[in-house]
Length: 337
Image (cartoon, rainbow, N blue to C red; front, side):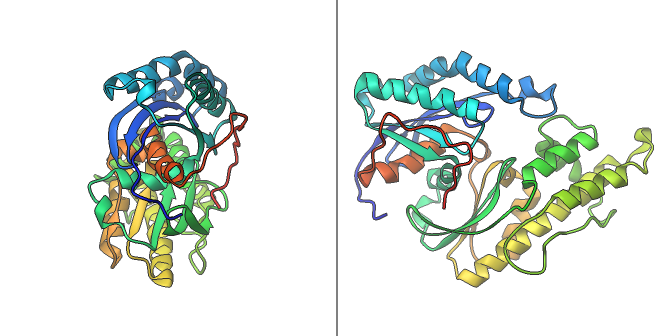
């Protein structure tokens, strides 16, 4: 994809899971607005995202979120060049709310429509940082979140090679499940990150799966090992900090080892971290210490699901002439490659 230096103002919508978000992004790198209505408190009572509840909440707030995004950007729909929306992967009910909203806006104002891959959005979150001018291809991106743990080689805009991914649980999913075992609030990732800072990371030797070769990941065995270890403790005397630190170190070790191996094998210019788990402080620190190439990651607000990253990804498709029909549908298991 050989993008030209064409300008764009894109209204982007993201509703793939439990965040309702709309943003206005200029030229694929400048955020004019990025509104996020989170449902974390709503789903905390379930210990995870409840799909039907998520889609209903999207319906309730989507219009207000889009209006606020335009208002904060000081724009009307007539000032927008294109409407972009996440079409997958994600929860089907949640995706439908965003896609139908985008279709309605595109039809009503005769605007081009683009359906964007959610994972590609995470990859392009790095184009919204102050390090954007340093980005050179080829680069390696680790997309690590509650639903994904994937390694992509990016050789140019829109050109990817999938090097490996999780064979079972995503890293963020493992954080959430272990958090639940430890009695921590949802989502488990931030809570474990905070507790691990005061724990002994060598207190328990949890397993590191699929470490010998290749670039795939596996975290289900690690999650099970933590659950078994916790059964040995009296709940009133459980060393939560030590378990959290030991678990987190095991996850980070696997992620960094595989990423380092891929970076060396493909001679990349840099490694990018993206997705919710990329906000983890131990992952950022260890990755930066162990790799010999620059390691970049977005600000915390751009690590979790947001529409600005969808607008950044959409820019490169828009300036290269891609346009989607109004009959596009959601694809819950959409693949990037």
